[in-house]
Image (cartoon, rainbow, N blue to C red):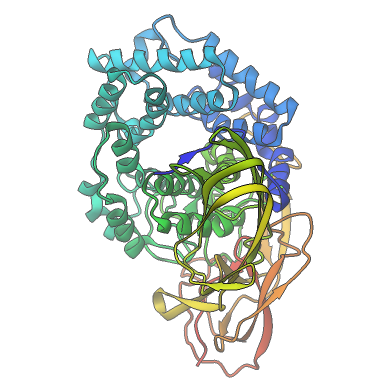
Length: 608
Protein backbone atom coordinates (compact mmCIF):
# COMPACT_ATOMS: atom_id res chain seq x y z
CA UNK A 1 0.00 0.00 0.00
CA UNK A 2 1.19 3.50 -0.87
CA UNK A 3 0.27 6.58 1.14
CA UNK A 4 -0.07 10.18 0.10
CA UNK A 5 2.57 12.62 1.22
CA UNK A 6 1.58 15.45 3.49
CA UNK A 7 -0.56 17.85 1.47
CA UNK A 8 1.59 20.71 0.27
CA UNK A 9 4.71 18.54 -0.11
CA UNK A 10 4.18 18.28 -3.88
CA UNK A 11 4.38 21.38 -6.07
CA UNK A 12 3.33 21.28 -9.74
CA UNK A 13 5.66 22.63 -12.42
CA UNK A 14 5.82 22.87 -16.19
CA UNK A 15 2.69 22.22 -18.20
CA UNK A 16 0.81 20.97 -15.13
CA UNK A 17 1.37 24.29 -13.37
CA UNK A 18 0.20 26.07 -16.52
CA UNK A 19 -2.98 23.97 -16.53
CA UNK A 20 -3.71 24.73 -12.86
CA UNK A 21 -3.20 28.46 -13.47
CA UNK A 22 -5.68 28.32 -16.34
CA UNK A 23 -8.12 26.62 -13.96
CA UNK A 24 -7.54 29.31 -11.33
CA UNK A 25 -8.26 32.05 -13.87
CA UNK A 26 -11.31 30.19 -15.19
CA UNK A 27 -14.60 28.98 -13.80
CA UNK A 28 -13.20 27.00 -10.86
CA UNK A 29 -11.28 29.94 -9.45
CA UNK A 30 -14.19 32.34 -9.80
CA UNK A 31 -17.32 30.28 -9.20
CA UNK A 32 -17.95 31.82 -5.76
CA UNK A 33 -18.09 35.25 -7.39
CA UNK A 34 -20.56 34.53 -10.18
CA UNK A 35 -22.73 31.48 -9.43
CA UNK A 36 -25.59 31.85 -6.92
CA UNK A 37 -25.45 28.20 -5.82
CA UNK A 38 -21.95 28.84 -4.46
CA UNK A 39 -22.05 32.57 -3.74
CA UNK A 40 -25.39 32.44 -1.89
CA UNK A 41 -25.42 28.83 -0.71
CA UNK A 42 -27.27 27.70 2.41
CA UNK A 43 -23.94 26.25 3.55
CA UNK A 44 -22.79 29.80 4.34
CA UNK A 45 -26.13 31.26 5.43
CA UNK A 46 -27.65 32.06 2.03
CA UNK A 47 -30.86 30.85 0.45
CA UNK A 48 -29.53 28.78 -2.47
CA UNK A 49 -28.63 25.10 -2.78
CA UNK A 50 -27.46 23.53 0.48
CA UNK A 51 -26.55 20.05 -0.61
CA UNK A 52 -23.70 18.89 -2.89
CA UNK A 53 -22.58 21.96 -4.84
CA UNK A 54 -20.51 23.87 -2.27
CA UNK A 55 -18.76 20.67 -1.08
CA UNK A 56 -18.16 19.61 -4.69
CA UNK A 57 -16.56 22.96 -5.47
CA UNK A 58 -14.45 23.10 -2.31
CA UNK A 59 -13.18 19.56 -2.95
CA UNK A 60 -11.22 20.90 -5.91
CA UNK A 61 -10.89 24.58 -4.99
CA UNK A 62 -9.01 23.92 -1.73
CA UNK A 63 -6.20 21.81 -3.25
CA UNK A 64 -6.05 24.17 -6.24
CA UNK A 65 -5.55 27.17 -3.93
CA UNK A 66 -2.84 25.52 -1.86
CA UNK A 67 -1.02 23.88 -4.79
CA UNK A 68 -0.70 27.33 -6.36
CA UNK A 69 -0.04 29.09 -3.06
CA UNK A 70 -2.57 31.72 -4.11
CA UNK A 71 -3.25 33.93 -1.07
CA UNK A 72 -6.59 35.24 -2.34
CA UNK A 73 -7.94 31.76 -3.08
CA UNK A 74 -6.67 30.45 0.27
CA UNK A 75 -8.44 33.32 2.03
CA UNK A 76 -11.68 32.54 0.19
CA UNK A 77 -11.40 28.83 1.00
CA UNK A 78 -10.83 29.71 4.66
CA UNK A 79 -13.91 31.93 4.61
CA UNK A 80 -16.14 29.10 3.36
CA UNK A 81 -14.78 26.50 5.77
CA UNK A 82 -15.07 28.83 8.76
CA UNK A 83 -18.61 29.81 7.78
CA UNK A 84 -19.62 26.15 7.49
CA UNK A 85 -18.26 25.10 10.88
CA UNK A 86 -19.68 28.22 12.58
CA UNK A 87 -23.13 26.89 11.60
CA UNK A 88 -22.47 23.41 12.94
CA UNK A 89 -25.05 22.36 15.51
CA UNK A 90 -24.12 21.70 19.12
CA UNK A 91 -24.52 17.93 18.66
CA UNK A 92 -22.18 18.00 15.64
CA UNK A 93 -24.70 17.97 12.78
CA UNK A 94 -23.09 19.98 10.00
CA UNK A 95 -25.38 20.07 6.97
CA UNK A 96 -27.82 22.97 6.37
CA UNK A 97 -31.24 21.54 7.13
CA UNK A 98 -33.79 21.98 9.96
CA UNK A 99 -33.30 19.67 12.94
CA UNK A 100 -36.67 18.04 12.37
CA UNK A 101 -35.82 17.31 8.72
CA UNK A 102 -32.59 15.39 9.15
CA UNK A 103 -34.22 12.11 8.17
CA UNK A 104 -35.23 13.74 4.87
CA UNK A 105 -31.72 15.00 4.10
CA UNK A 106 -29.77 12.73 1.74
CA UNK A 107 -26.53 12.17 3.65
CA UNK A 108 -24.45 11.80 0.47
CA UNK A 109 -23.68 15.52 1.00
CA UNK A 110 -22.73 14.72 4.60
CA UNK A 111 -20.09 12.25 3.35
CA UNK A 112 -18.91 14.81 0.82
CA UNK A 113 -18.44 17.67 3.30
CA UNK A 114 -16.51 15.20 5.46
CA UNK A 115 -14.09 14.64 2.56
CA UNK A 116 -13.75 18.40 2.15
CA UNK A 117 -12.94 19.01 5.81
CA UNK A 118 -10.33 16.23 5.67
CA UNK A 119 -8.69 17.84 2.61
CA UNK A 120 -8.64 21.21 4.37
CA UNK A 121 -7.07 19.79 7.54
CA UNK A 122 -4.50 17.93 5.46
CA UNK A 123 -3.30 21.23 3.99
CA UNK A 124 -3.65 23.42 7.10
CA UNK A 125 -3.44 21.27 10.26
CA UNK A 126 -6.31 23.40 11.58
CA UNK A 127 -7.30 21.83 14.91
CA UNK A 128 -10.72 23.51 15.00
CA UNK A 129 -11.66 22.05 11.62
CA UNK A 130 -10.37 18.61 12.63
CA UNK A 131 -12.55 18.85 15.73
CA UNK A 132 -15.49 19.87 13.55
CA UNK A 133 -14.97 16.80 11.35
CA UNK A 134 -14.72 14.56 14.42
CA UNK A 135 -17.92 15.97 15.92
CA UNK A 136 -19.82 15.74 12.63
CA UNK A 137 -18.98 12.06 12.17
CA UNK A 138 -19.73 11.29 15.81
CA UNK A 139 -23.14 12.92 15.30
CA UNK A 140 -23.72 10.80 12.19
CA UNK A 141 -22.75 7.72 14.21
CA UNK A 142 -25.33 8.56 16.88
CA UNK A 143 -28.03 9.33 14.33
CA UNK A 144 -27.56 6.03 12.49
CA UNK A 145 -27.13 4.04 15.69
CA UNK A 146 -30.39 5.46 17.08
CA UNK A 147 -32.12 5.10 13.67
CA UNK A 148 -32.69 8.83 13.46
CA UNK A 149 -31.59 8.73 9.85
CA UNK A 150 -31.17 6.00 7.25
CA UNK A 151 -29.40 5.95 3.93
CA UNK A 152 -31.53 6.44 0.84
CA UNK A 153 -31.14 7.56 -2.78
CA UNK A 154 -27.64 8.96 -3.40
CA UNK A 155 -26.35 8.15 0.06
CA UNK A 156 -27.36 4.53 -0.38
CA UNK A 157 -25.46 4.27 -3.68
CA UNK A 158 -22.45 6.32 -2.56
CA UNK A 159 -22.08 4.92 0.96
CA UNK A 160 -18.37 4.13 0.49
CA UNK A 161 -17.53 7.84 0.10
CA UNK A 162 -17.96 8.07 3.87
CA UNK A 163 -14.97 5.74 4.32
CA UNK A 164 -12.61 8.48 3.15
CA UNK A 165 -13.22 10.97 6.00
CA UNK A 166 -13.58 8.05 8.43
CA UNK A 167 -10.15 6.74 7.41
CA UNK A 168 -8.76 10.24 7.93
CA UNK A 169 -10.16 10.25 11.47
CA UNK A 170 -9.18 6.67 12.26
CA UNK A 171 -5.55 7.34 11.31
CA UNK A 172 -5.52 10.05 13.99
CA UNK A 173 -7.73 8.70 16.79
CA UNK A 174 -7.94 4.89 16.41
CA UNK A 175 -11.35 4.96 18.14
CA UNK A 176 -13.56 1.95 17.47
CA UNK A 177 -16.78 3.93 16.91
CA UNK A 178 -15.24 5.19 13.67
CA UNK A 179 -15.08 1.67 12.26
CA UNK A 180 -18.52 0.90 13.69
CA UNK A 181 -19.96 3.85 11.79
CA UNK A 182 -18.25 2.66 8.61
CA UNK A 183 -19.75 -0.82 9.00
CA UNK A 184 -23.21 0.57 9.73
CA UNK A 185 -23.04 2.70 6.60
CA UNK A 186 -21.88 -0.27 4.54
CA UNK A 187 -24.75 -2.40 5.82
CA UNK A 188 -27.25 0.17 4.59
CA UNK A 189 -25.50 0.66 1.25
CA UNK A 190 -26.10 -1.30 -1.94
CA UNK A 191 -24.14 -4.26 -3.31
CA UNK A 192 -23.30 -3.34 -6.89
CA UNK A 193 -22.98 -6.95 -8.01
CA UNK A 194 -26.78 -7.12 -7.68
CA UNK A 195 -27.15 -4.78 -10.68
CA UNK A 196 -24.76 -6.20 -13.26
CA UNK A 197 -27.62 -7.49 -15.43
CA UNK A 198 -28.90 -3.91 -15.70
CA UNK A 199 -25.56 -2.81 -17.19
CA UNK A 200 -25.58 -5.29 -20.05
CA UNK A 201 -28.63 -3.93 -21.87
CA UNK A 202 -29.02 -0.36 -20.60
CA UNK A 203 -32.38 1.30 -21.16
CA UNK A 204 -33.11 4.96 -21.86
CA UNK A 205 -34.54 5.45 -18.40
CA UNK A 206 -33.08 7.03 -15.28
CA UNK A 207 -32.06 4.72 -12.42
CA UNK A 208 -29.59 4.91 -9.56
CA UNK A 209 -28.38 1.44 -10.54
CA UNK A 210 -27.13 2.58 -13.96
CA UNK A 211 -26.24 6.18 -13.11
CA UNK A 212 -22.77 6.74 -14.57
CA UNK A 213 -21.38 8.83 -11.69
CA UNK A 214 -22.50 6.31 -9.08
CA UNK A 215 -20.71 3.59 -11.03
CA UNK A 216 -17.48 5.54 -11.53
CA UNK A 217 -17.36 6.25 -7.80
CA UNK A 218 -18.19 2.59 -7.11
CA UNK A 219 -14.86 1.05 -8.15
CA UNK A 220 -13.09 2.12 -4.96
CA UNK A 221 -15.71 0.77 -2.55
CA UNK A 222 -13.91 -2.46 -1.65
CA UNK A 223 -10.46 -0.85 -1.44
CA UNK A 224 -11.44 1.99 0.90
CA UNK A 225 -13.52 -0.38 3.04
CA UNK A 226 -10.81 -3.03 3.27
CA UNK A 227 -8.30 -0.39 4.31
CA UNK A 228 -10.52 1.00 7.07
CA UNK A 229 -11.63 -2.38 8.43
CA UNK A 230 -8.34 -4.23 7.94
CA UNK A 231 -9.96 -6.75 5.60
CA UNK A 232 -8.43 -8.76 2.78
CA UNK A 233 -8.77 -7.07 -0.60
CA UNK A 234 -10.22 -9.40 -3.26
CA UNK A 235 -10.03 -7.12 -6.33
CA UNK A 236 -13.77 -6.96 -6.91
CA UNK A 237 -13.23 -3.68 -8.75
CA UNK A 238 -11.65 -5.49 -11.69
CA UNK A 239 -14.66 -7.78 -12.17
CA UNK A 240 -16.97 -4.76 -12.11
CA UNK A 241 -14.71 -2.91 -14.55
CA UNK A 242 -14.71 -5.76 -17.04
CA UNK A 243 -18.52 -5.91 -17.03
CA UNK A 244 -18.93 -2.18 -17.55
CA UNK A 245 -16.19 -1.94 -20.17
CA UNK A 246 -17.57 -4.83 -22.22
CA UNK A 247 -21.05 -3.36 -22.51
CA UNK A 248 -20.47 0.40 -22.07
CA UNK A 249 -16.76 1.09 -22.62
CA UNK A 250 -15.37 4.03 -24.60
CA UNK A 251 -12.20 4.67 -26.58
CA UNK A 252 -10.89 7.05 -23.91
CA UNK A 253 -11.10 4.45 -21.14
CA UNK A 254 -14.29 5.55 -19.44
CA UNK A 255 -17.93 4.59 -19.94
CA UNK A 256 -20.96 6.04 -21.68
CA UNK A 257 -23.58 7.61 -19.47
CA UNK A 258 -25.95 10.40 -20.44
CA UNK A 259 -26.82 10.27 -17.49
CA UNK A 260 -27.23 6.53 -17.28
CA UNK A 261 -25.39 3.79 -19.11
CA UNK A 262 -25.75 3.99 -22.89
CA UNK A 263 -23.93 1.00 -24.39
CA UNK A 264 -20.82 1.15 -26.56
CA UNK A 265 -22.12 3.67 -29.09
CA UNK A 266 -19.46 6.20 -30.06
CA UNK A 267 -22.04 8.97 -30.45
CA UNK A 268 -23.61 8.79 -27.00
CA UNK A 269 -22.57 10.99 -24.09
CA UNK A 270 -20.32 10.60 -21.05
CA UNK A 271 -20.94 12.91 -18.11
CA UNK A 272 -18.03 15.10 -16.97
CA UNK A 273 -18.64 14.25 -13.29
CA UNK A 274 -18.05 10.61 -14.16
CA UNK A 275 -14.64 11.44 -15.64
CA UNK A 276 -13.28 13.22 -12.55
CA UNK A 277 -14.83 10.69 -10.17
CA UNK A 278 -13.39 7.78 -12.14
CA UNK A 279 -9.99 9.48 -12.03
CA UNK A 280 -10.25 9.78 -8.25
CA UNK A 281 -11.30 6.12 -7.94
CA UNK A 282 -8.28 5.07 -10.01
CA UNK A 283 -5.96 7.21 -7.87
CA UNK A 284 -7.15 5.63 -4.64
CA UNK A 285 -7.20 2.14 -6.12
CA UNK A 286 -3.59 2.41 -7.25
CA UNK A 287 -2.46 3.84 -3.92
CA UNK A 288 -4.22 1.14 -1.89
CA UNK A 289 -3.67 -1.91 -4.12
CA UNK A 290 -0.46 -1.00 -6.01
CA UNK A 291 -2.03 -2.57 -9.11
CA UNK A 292 -0.55 -0.56 -12.04
CA UNK A 293 -3.61 -1.06 -14.23
CA UNK A 294 -5.39 1.65 -12.24
CA UNK A 295 -2.64 4.19 -12.88
CA UNK A 296 -2.69 3.33 -16.60
CA UNK A 297 -6.44 3.86 -16.68
CA UNK A 298 -6.06 7.11 -14.76
CA UNK A 299 -3.58 8.51 -17.29
CA UNK A 300 -5.79 7.64 -20.25
CA UNK A 301 -8.71 9.47 -18.66
CA UNK A 302 -6.66 12.46 -17.52
CA UNK A 303 -4.87 13.05 -20.82
CA UNK A 304 -7.91 12.48 -23.05
CA UNK A 305 -11.38 12.66 -21.51
CA UNK A 306 -10.74 15.47 -19.01
CA UNK A 307 -9.39 18.17 -21.36
CA UNK A 308 -11.77 17.13 -24.15
CA UNK A 309 -14.90 18.26 -22.33
CA UNK A 310 -13.63 21.59 -20.94
CA UNK A 311 -12.83 24.68 -23.03
CA UNK A 312 -9.24 25.85 -23.46
CA UNK A 313 -9.74 28.72 -20.99
CA UNK A 314 -11.64 26.46 -18.53
CA UNK A 315 -14.51 28.94 -18.31
CA UNK A 316 -17.01 26.56 -19.93
CA UNK A 317 -17.58 22.82 -20.07
CA UNK A 318 -19.92 20.19 -21.42
CA UNK A 319 -22.22 18.09 -19.32
CA UNK A 320 -21.53 15.17 -21.68
CA UNK A 321 -18.86 14.53 -24.30
CA UNK A 322 -19.12 12.21 -27.31
CA UNK A 323 -16.28 10.13 -28.76
CA UNK A 324 -17.44 10.91 -32.31
CA UNK A 325 -18.62 14.48 -31.78
CA UNK A 326 -19.25 16.34 -35.04
CA UNK A 327 -21.34 19.19 -33.58
CA UNK A 328 -22.35 20.65 -30.23
CA UNK A 329 -25.66 22.20 -31.24
CA UNK A 330 -28.91 22.10 -29.26
CA UNK A 331 -31.24 19.46 -30.64
CA UNK A 332 -34.33 21.22 -32.03
CA UNK A 333 -36.65 18.43 -30.97
CA UNK A 334 -36.20 15.28 -28.92
CA UNK A 335 -32.82 14.96 -27.23
CA UNK A 336 -30.56 12.29 -28.64
CA UNK A 337 -29.27 11.44 -25.17
CA UNK A 338 -30.85 8.86 -22.91
CA UNK A 339 -32.01 11.05 -20.02
CA UNK A 340 -30.14 14.34 -20.64
CA UNK A 341 -31.74 17.34 -22.27
CA UNK A 342 -30.98 18.78 -25.71
CA UNK A 343 -28.21 21.13 -24.55
CA UNK A 344 -26.14 18.68 -22.49
CA UNK A 345 -23.28 18.62 -25.04
CA UNK A 346 -22.88 22.36 -25.61
CA UNK A 347 -20.16 24.26 -23.76
CA UNK A 348 -21.40 26.61 -21.06
CA UNK A 349 -21.79 27.59 -17.42
CA UNK A 350 -24.14 24.77 -16.46
CA UNK A 351 -25.45 22.94 -19.53
CA UNK A 352 -28.24 20.54 -18.57
CA UNK A 353 -27.42 20.50 -14.82
CA UNK A 354 -25.03 22.22 -12.45
CA UNK A 355 -23.32 19.33 -10.66
CA UNK A 356 -20.45 19.26 -13.17
CA UNK A 357 -20.10 23.04 -12.88
CA UNK A 358 -19.06 22.53 -9.26
CA UNK A 359 -17.43 19.10 -9.44
CA UNK A 360 -15.21 19.20 -12.51
CA UNK A 361 -12.50 21.20 -10.76
CA UNK A 362 -11.23 18.28 -8.66
CA UNK A 363 -9.68 16.59 -11.72
CA UNK A 364 -6.38 18.41 -12.27
CA UNK A 365 -5.54 19.28 -8.62
CA UNK A 366 -6.02 15.72 -7.37
CA UNK A 367 -3.97 14.40 -10.28
CA UNK A 368 -1.15 16.78 -9.28
CA UNK A 369 -1.26 15.48 -5.70
CA UNK A 370 -0.98 11.90 -7.04
CA UNK A 371 2.39 12.28 -8.80
CA UNK A 372 4.44 11.25 -5.73
CA UNK A 373 3.39 8.59 -3.22
CA UNK A 374 5.04 7.32 -0.06
CA UNK A 375 6.23 3.70 0.04
CA UNK A 376 7.09 1.81 3.23
CA UNK A 377 10.64 3.09 3.32
CA UNK A 378 11.07 5.33 0.32
CA UNK A 379 9.53 7.46 -2.42
CA UNK A 380 7.39 6.28 -5.32
CA UNK A 381 6.76 8.23 -8.51
CA UNK A 382 3.25 7.17 -9.50
CA UNK A 383 2.90 9.43 -12.53
CA UNK A 384 5.54 11.27 -14.53
CA UNK A 385 4.08 14.72 -14.09
CA UNK A 386 6.26 17.84 -13.95
CA UNK A 387 6.48 18.49 -10.21
CA UNK A 388 8.74 18.63 -7.17
CA UNK A 389 8.45 16.77 -3.88
CA UNK A 390 9.98 18.18 -0.70
CA UNK A 391 9.94 15.74 2.21
CA UNK A 392 12.09 14.01 4.80
CA UNK A 393 13.38 10.44 4.72
CA UNK A 394 14.76 9.12 8.01
CA UNK A 395 14.93 12.69 9.26
CA UNK A 396 16.94 13.93 6.26
CA UNK A 397 15.45 16.63 3.98
CA UNK A 398 15.08 15.27 0.43
CA UNK A 399 13.91 16.91 -2.77
CA UNK A 400 12.85 14.99 -5.88
CA UNK A 401 12.11 16.84 -9.08
CA UNK A 402 10.49 15.54 -12.28
CA UNK A 403 11.22 17.54 -15.43
CA UNK A 404 9.11 16.29 -18.29
CA UNK A 405 6.70 17.15 -21.09
CA UNK A 406 4.97 13.79 -20.68
CA UNK A 407 2.47 12.85 -22.13
CA UNK A 408 3.38 15.10 -25.08
CA UNK A 409 6.94 13.72 -25.03
CA UNK A 410 8.13 10.30 -23.91
CA UNK A 411 11.05 11.19 -21.67
CA UNK A 412 11.68 12.55 -18.19
CA UNK A 413 14.59 13.79 -16.13
CA UNK A 414 14.44 12.93 -12.43
CA UNK A 415 16.72 14.67 -9.94
CA UNK A 416 17.19 13.64 -6.31
CA UNK A 417 18.90 16.03 -3.94
CA UNK A 418 19.82 15.57 -0.28
CA UNK A 419 22.34 17.54 1.78
CA UNK A 420 23.15 14.55 3.98
CA UNK A 421 23.70 10.90 3.18
CA UNK A 422 20.49 8.89 3.31
CA UNK A 423 19.61 5.47 1.91
CA UNK A 424 16.18 4.73 0.51
CA UNK A 425 14.61 3.21 -2.62
CA UNK A 426 13.18 5.48 -5.30
CA UNK A 427 10.67 3.60 -7.42
CA UNK A 428 9.19 4.79 -10.70
CA UNK A 429 6.03 3.36 -12.23
CA UNK A 430 6.49 2.44 -15.88
CA UNK A 431 3.28 2.80 -17.98
CA UNK A 432 2.07 -0.40 -19.61
CA UNK A 433 2.21 1.06 -23.14
CA UNK A 434 6.03 1.36 -23.00
CA UNK A 435 7.70 -0.91 -25.57
CA UNK A 436 11.30 -0.18 -24.56
CA UNK A 437 13.03 1.75 -21.80
CA UNK A 438 16.40 3.46 -21.50
CA UNK A 439 17.72 4.89 -18.24
CA UNK A 440 20.71 7.20 -18.61
CA UNK A 441 21.18 5.76 -22.08
CA UNK A 442 21.26 2.10 -20.98
CA UNK A 443 18.59 -0.39 -22.00
CA UNK A 444 16.29 -1.71 -19.27
CA UNK A 445 13.39 -4.11 -19.29
CA UNK A 446 10.16 -2.07 -19.09
CA UNK A 447 8.66 -3.75 -16.03
CA UNK A 448 5.71 -2.27 -14.13
CA UNK A 449 8.05 -0.54 -11.71
CA UNK A 450 11.71 0.47 -11.79
CA UNK A 451 13.55 0.63 -8.45
CA UNK A 452 16.72 2.56 -7.74
CA UNK A 453 18.09 2.04 -4.25
CA UNK A 454 21.27 3.76 -3.21
CA UNK A 455 22.82 6.09 -0.69
CA UNK A 456 21.73 9.52 -1.87
CA UNK A 457 24.02 12.46 -1.22
CA UNK A 458 24.17 15.80 -2.98
CA UNK A 459 22.42 15.98 -6.36
CA UNK A 460 21.94 13.02 -8.68
CA UNK A 461 20.00 13.04 -11.96
CA UNK A 462 18.92 10.32 -14.34
CA UNK A 463 16.87 10.31 -17.52
CA UNK A 464 14.08 7.98 -18.60
CA UNK A 465 13.36 7.52 -22.31
CA UNK A 466 10.33 5.49 -23.40
CA UNK A 467 9.33 4.28 -26.82
CA UNK A 468 6.02 3.35 -28.34
CA UNK A 469 4.81 2.73 -31.88
CA UNK A 470 1.66 4.56 -33.02
CA UNK A 471 -0.99 1.93 -33.49
CA UNK A 472 -4.69 1.19 -33.73
CA UNK A 473 -7.03 0.03 -31.00
CA UNK A 474 -10.05 -1.97 -32.15
CA UNK A 475 -13.51 -0.64 -31.40
CA UNK A 476 -17.06 -1.97 -32.06
CA UNK A 477 -18.46 -1.99 -35.62
CA UNK A 478 -15.01 -2.86 -37.00
CA UNK A 479 -13.78 0.68 -36.32
CA UNK A 480 -10.33 1.76 -35.14
CA UNK A 481 -8.86 4.41 -32.87
CA UNK A 482 -5.32 5.76 -33.25
CA UNK A 483 -3.18 5.72 -30.09
CA UNK A 484 0.38 6.76 -29.26
CA UNK A 485 1.58 6.46 -25.68
CA UNK A 486 -1.32 7.30 -23.35
CA UNK A 487 -2.96 9.66 -25.87
CA UNK A 488 -5.66 8.73 -28.36
CA UNK A 489 -5.97 10.81 -31.51
CA UNK A 490 -8.93 12.16 -33.46
CA UNK A 491 -9.68 13.72 -36.80
CA UNK A 492 -10.27 17.38 -35.85
CA UNK A 493 -13.31 19.12 -37.34
CA UNK A 494 -12.90 22.82 -38.08
CA UNK A 495 -15.12 24.63 -35.57
CA UNK A 496 -17.15 27.83 -35.44
CA UNK A 497 -18.14 29.01 -31.95
CA UNK A 498 -21.58 30.62 -31.67
CA UNK A 499 -21.95 32.57 -28.44
CA UNK A 500 -25.14 32.91 -26.36
CA UNK A 501 -25.51 35.39 -23.49
CA UNK A 502 -28.77 35.29 -21.54
CA UNK A 503 -30.49 35.05 -18.14
CA UNK A 504 -32.12 31.80 -17.03
CA UNK A 505 -33.75 31.17 -13.64
CA UNK A 506 -32.01 34.22 -12.29
CA UNK A 507 -28.55 32.96 -13.33
CA UNK A 508 -26.65 35.09 -15.80
CA UNK A 509 -24.60 33.68 -18.65
CA UNK A 510 -22.23 36.27 -20.00
CA UNK A 511 -18.74 36.22 -21.44
CA UNK A 512 -16.51 34.44 -20.50
CA UNK A 513 -18.99 32.07 -18.81
CA UNK A 514 -21.65 32.25 -21.51
CA UNK A 515 -22.88 29.30 -23.57
CA UNK A 516 -21.41 28.19 -26.90
CA UNK A 517 -22.64 26.01 -29.68
CA UNK A 518 -19.87 24.43 -31.75
CA UNK A 519 -20.71 24.30 -35.45
CA UNK A 520 -18.73 22.07 -37.85
CA UNK A 521 -17.04 23.77 -40.81
CA UNK A 522 -15.13 20.88 -42.38
CA UNK A 523 -15.88 17.35 -43.51
CA UNK A 524 -15.79 14.58 -40.93
CA UNK A 525 -16.52 11.53 -43.07
CA UNK A 526 -13.16 9.76 -43.23
CA UNK A 527 -11.49 6.41 -42.76
CA UNK A 528 -7.89 5.30 -42.33
CA UNK A 529 -5.97 3.77 -45.23
CA UNK A 530 -3.37 1.97 -43.16
CA UNK A 531 -1.52 2.06 -39.84
CA UNK A 532 1.21 4.38 -41.13
CA UNK A 533 0.92 6.97 -38.36
CA UNK A 534 3.70 9.55 -38.07
CA UNK A 535 4.24 11.48 -34.79
CA UNK A 536 4.87 15.22 -35.09
CA UNK A 537 6.24 17.16 -32.11
CA UNK A 538 5.18 20.80 -32.04
CA UNK A 539 5.98 23.83 -29.89
CA UNK A 540 2.32 24.33 -28.99
CA UNK A 541 1.24 27.41 -27.06
CA UNK A 542 0.62 28.37 -23.43
CA UNK A 543 -2.39 26.02 -23.21
CA UNK A 544 -1.19 22.43 -22.63
CA UNK A 545 -4.16 20.78 -24.40
CA UNK A 546 -4.66 23.57 -26.91
CA UNK A 547 -7.40 23.16 -29.49
CA UNK A 548 -5.44 25.46 -31.83
CA UNK A 549 -1.81 24.40 -31.42
CA UNK A 550 -1.45 20.86 -30.03
CA UNK A 551 1.99 19.92 -28.73
CA UNK A 552 1.84 16.55 -30.47
CA UNK A 553 -0.06 15.30 -33.52
CA UNK A 554 -0.13 12.23 -35.76
CA UNK A 555 -0.09 12.37 -39.54
CA UNK A 556 -2.28 9.72 -41.13
CA UNK A 557 -3.26 8.82 -44.70
CA UNK A 558 -7.04 8.84 -45.00
CA UNK A 559 -9.88 8.75 -47.53
CA UNK A 560 -13.41 10.10 -47.45
CA UNK A 561 -16.11 7.48 -46.95
CA UNK A 562 -19.89 7.41 -47.19
CA UNK A 563 -21.17 8.17 -43.68
CA UNK A 564 -24.66 9.33 -42.81
CA UNK A 565 -26.21 11.02 -39.79
CA UNK A 566 -27.99 9.12 -37.04
CA UNK A 567 -31.62 8.67 -38.10
CA UNK A 568 -33.72 11.68 -37.11
CA UNK A 569 -30.74 13.99 -36.45
CA UNK A 570 -28.53 16.13 -38.67
CA UNK A 571 -25.84 16.94 -36.08
CA UNK A 572 -25.02 13.41 -34.89
CA UNK A 573 -22.87 11.04 -36.94
CA UNK A 574 -24.20 7.51 -37.32
CA UNK A 575 -22.31 4.96 -35.26
CA UNK A 576 -20.64 3.48 -38.34
CA UNK A 577 -20.26 4.39 -42.01
CA UNK A 578 -22.58 3.08 -44.69
CA UNK A 579 -19.58 1.43 -46.33
CA UNK A 580 -15.86 0.88 -45.73
CA UNK A 581 -15.17 1.28 -49.45
CA UNK A 582 -13.86 4.50 -50.96
CA UNK A 583 -12.95 5.62 -54.46
CA UNK A 584 -11.71 9.00 -53.22
CA UNK A 585 -8.14 10.26 -53.39
CA UNK A 586 -5.91 9.67 -50.40
CA UNK A 587 -5.15 12.67 -48.18
CA UNK A 588 -2.55 13.13 -45.49
CA UNK A 589 -4.37 14.51 -42.46
CA UNK A 590 -3.03 15.71 -39.12
CA UNK A 591 -4.78 14.01 -36.21
CA UNK A 592 -5.11 15.95 -32.94
CA UNK A 593 -5.01 14.54 -29.42
CA UNK A 594 -8.56 13.66 -28.42
CA UNK A 595 -8.45 16.19 -25.57
CA UNK A 596 -7.53 19.00 -28.00
CA UNK A 597 -10.16 18.38 -30.68
CA UNK A 598 -13.47 19.74 -29.38
CA UNK A 599 -15.23 18.56 -32.55
CA UNK A 600 -13.78 15.27 -33.72
CA UNK A 601 -14.07 11.84 -35.23
CA UNK A 602 -12.22 9.25 -33.15
CA UNK A 603 -13.54 5.83 -34.15
CA UNK A 604 -13.18 5.34 -37.91
CA UNK A 605 -12.89 2.41 -40.33
CA UNK A 606 -9.96 1.04 -42.29
CA UNK A 607 -10.89 1.91 -45.87
CA UNK A 608 -11.00 -0.99 -48.32
